[in-house]
Length: 112
Length: 116
Image 1: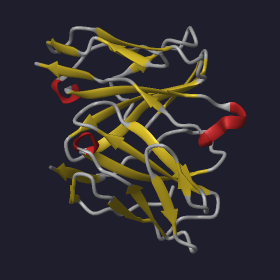
Image 2: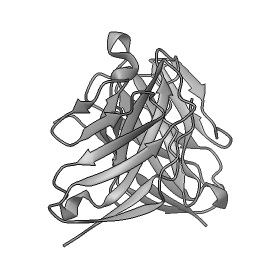
Image 3: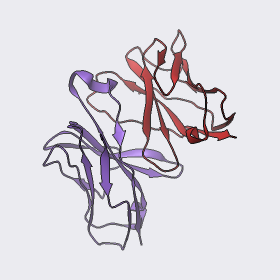
């Protein structure tokens, strides 16, 4: 699976959009981009995933660059409850192993 | 409510005393997995199971055993716990088949284990 690079931490103001970048320059054509988050030692929670098109759900939007070498997770209106560690994960399609390889992630702190 | 449950949530034990951490899911998922999380090392997979009676090693299987006798349950067994197994443990599950890797993995709330 391709390696990802994320900033160690970032702050965001409550009510504003939070834009979380992820670099995955070695991604291959059959690899998806997944985002999970972990709120203070709770179990990780799935947010969104995508292949090449931009995706949106009730939690967030995922913007993937045309060359697929990077992506941005957007939390449109951050709240204090969005304070968490956010993990960008790239994994291959049709794998027999569904392991998720979590890196260090980005610690996002939403401030009032 | 769809969920993955783990028990116990907290456990303090002593070296060598066998213990089992249970994991159960109510979503009829084929795939289940155990991870451990340690500061600076992220989450690492211990064992996984693709279905009943099918288990395989993850990245850090030493010192652990698992079984999958029923689809909903995937217990993690530490036959002779040691202090280096002090960690935060997570169980996860996911469906397979045509939904394949598209599907999200659901994680349990975690079990914090301390081995003295």
